[in-house]
Image 1 (tube, rainbow, N blue to C red):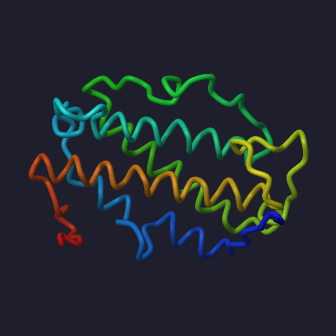
Image 2: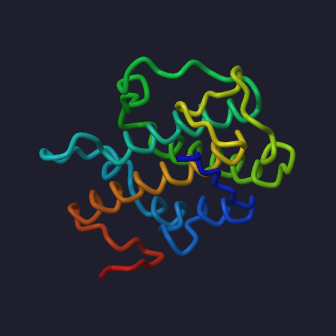
Length: 171
């Protein structure tokens, strides 16, 4: 069986990163959550909303740095990518997440990055072997973020905070 190569345009990846039709817009997902709500721990759930965003910040930074050609070591355990979050940092954490997301979206306009091939030295996307390192990194961020947006939606629903003030699908 031959290995398939996934080709995605930069515009389509930006569409996914911004929420597109598949996911909620990240700005709207987070804009009306207070620091108290973001750090509220629910007994049956492993992470708070703030911890999920800290995790996304970790990976967005990891992928962004890698796309820029300065690969960081892959974490030795999942704990490394789940930083603890103190209650007073929510506004900065959310702002950092959205700013990093904006930088990643701008990478989608870098045609050279989207065409750059993997090499033994640049294969830092968790073992992926697709032809384009840029495409792989960028669509992996979009899919990873989308997965965790679902967690945030679930936490918001459990706290009675869904839909966001900006609206959203509630069915």
